[in-house]
Image (cartoon, rainbow, N blue to C red; front, side, top):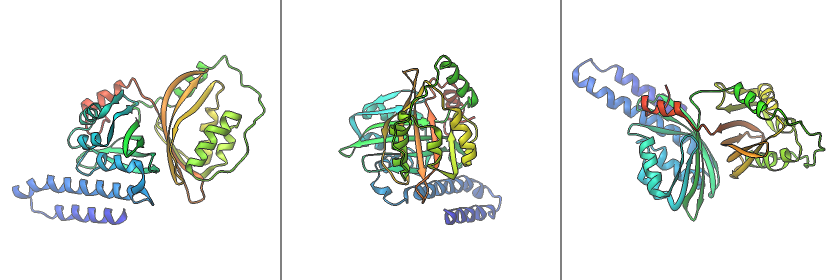
Length: 327
């Protein structure tokens, strides 16, 4: 990546030396576009260079969505099974190659780039984090996509993107108000105390075993790295380090609120999973998460994205700035 930055800087320096003639002026835009293409390709290459990334299911979608030339709706459709479902948490669920191709064509106009940041999973399921860019390399909306393949075809995907308006602590207040009449049970924990390593093993342990059987956030914190970065897109800034993350996760230890994983990918260094929130026993908002782990097998990166529908601000941003979908 550093080498790519050096090369891109060199290209920009060369363009700065051109005399201000008409011919040179007309060449500036293609050169800038070339640099943006080069940087996009370099970033995607870095994300895809992780060991075994070529065998990951998510890589198939990355290849056609995160191409330097832009999103290829027809290539996305070619990946899909006839019954494939693509769920965009900011809009709707689209079924079949035709609907999915139209969705990509409308959401990603010409000049839009999607850059892959991190990838997770195996040959069956997985996901990737990403951000949008315009032709000049300016960063836009960020998100995460989960994918599931069967017999080489995409059968299900869920895409989550950050809300334009960050409700922050209002989310905590709303959940607490919704469960105000529920008292916290003093039940004896029945989970087995273990110290799993790796993103998928930890996510599975926490959400399918420990939390449902009475674990407190202290159990999760033991499995987090000291330098963890936690991105909850309801908040404008990430939580950095275990101290900040501790305060955040303890605030959401609310009786009557249960986070239930619905699809969980494999992956030692990273995993992606979908979930829903149950509020007082009733199905509530859906979401998507991405976990990354360090060389010690502890979680050092989390990105959580809840459903943003209805998303009038994101729809407005798409009209104002269709490439970036941000104001």
